[in-house]
Image (cartoon, rainbow, N blue to C red; front, top):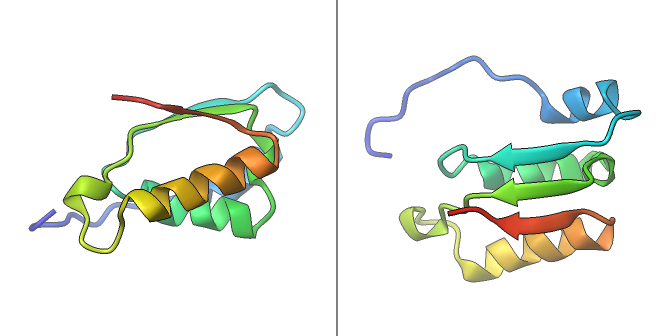
Length: 88
């Protein structure tokens, strides 16, 4: 995390919209970026397009995230019907 590398990104909400007619199971291990990405899909109201998500949470290596912020996101995902699983 000390030496970030810039990479080209895609809008995950757009991907979810594109495949909305399919069962969508996501495995997410994106080294701390899961917080921004999942907050974005919640805000865009596209989180509900996921049936299930397996997430490797990286709050222990982040300075601005913790167990509480992780639980907040998990609850928001569950509220729209997403099954949420921890991935280690």
